[in-house]
Each structure stands twice: as C-alpha cells, then as structure tokens.
Image 1 (spheres, one colour):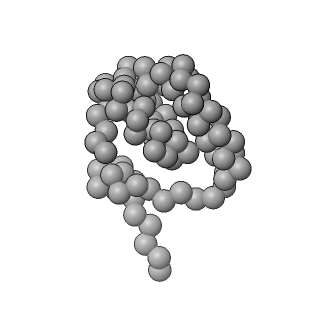
Image 2 (cartoon, one colour):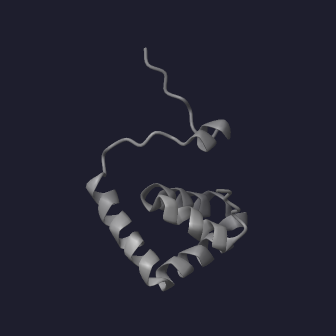
Image 3 (cartoon, rainbow, N blue to C red):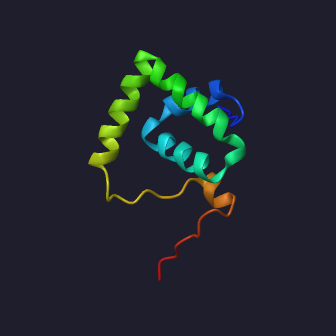
Length: 90
C-alpha cells in the first residue's frame, strides 16, 4: 500500500491497516509536517464520520493506553529519514 500524505483517502486506508501504530504516527506527522496537516486532519474527520472506522479508532485508543510504557521501536521509514537515532547495544 502506498501512503500519500497529500491525499486523505489513502491516509484513511493506510491508518485502518494498523490503527494503533499509524494513529500515533499521523499525530506526530501532523505536528512536525505542517504541509501535510490539512490532509491528515481531513483523514481524521473521515475516520470519525465512518461508524466502522470510528470503532477501530476507539479500540485502538483502548489498546494504546493498555500498552503504555512498552517501548515501540522506530519504523524503517523513520530510521531511513534520520528522524530517530539508532540505539546500539553495548
């Protein structure tokens, strides 16, 4: 699946694949990448307007809170973009 951060439809479909992880990424990108904020906000609106996707959103939020404190490794894209430092075991 290709994600186009300028297209709310692809954002919604991408989010629905793994809402727990993708929701957090979208929130971060909306904050750090203002050029995509409009499409991300439109995707959020569409998610909330769709009954099925809204249930996914609610379920993912419950799971997020349950899993707080468990470290989540950075995605390959984040590493490739140099957005996070790699932690090396000594």
